[in-house]
Amino acid sequence: MEEYFNELEELLREYHNHHTKISVGNRIKLSQDGSRLKSLCLGVRGAPGLAIKRRDKTLCPHLTKHTQTDKGHAIYTLIYTMISFIYPDFQFNSIIVNFNSNFIKHKDKKNVNRDSVIFSVGNHTGGGLELYDDDDTLREIKHIYHNLTRFAGKTTTHATQPFDGERWCIVAYQTKPKYHYCPFEKQLHAL
Image (cartoon, rainbow, N blue to C red; front, side, top):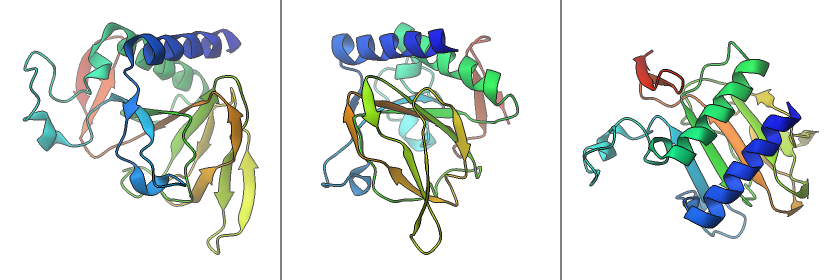
């Protein structure tokens, strides 16, 4: 599995540095200092209404534009493969890659399913997944570096443990659109 982590880190570094595709996201309320966080969204688009407004009509309106680039597709396929090995029964249709983002306490209320799968790559220390009880007491820190971890992101308050270094955090989850994208078939399937 280590070779997959190394390959993913290499792909993400190249995509970030050479193509600057990991861009500013819209998660303002989830950052500690109120700044926008950098994210790469892959898989099925979360807001179908926005697809109609897409300028490039050659792209599939139900997939993110990054999923439809060669490198983005390679990243999605690799993550899809890794998750399928560890959690073959886990259903997801979206992946978000956060670059050097430190999320404050939150729940993923917009996710359809209770569970998410999370892990990190990069040259960093710290950056684990902090899980909290309902009374906001820190219950556990999950070490997610090169460790695919399934957790109840929709119902459990969670945050990023402080970290040093370069960190990509990958989260797979199920969004509302009733589609699943199989990268090997390059087809959307209705759920």
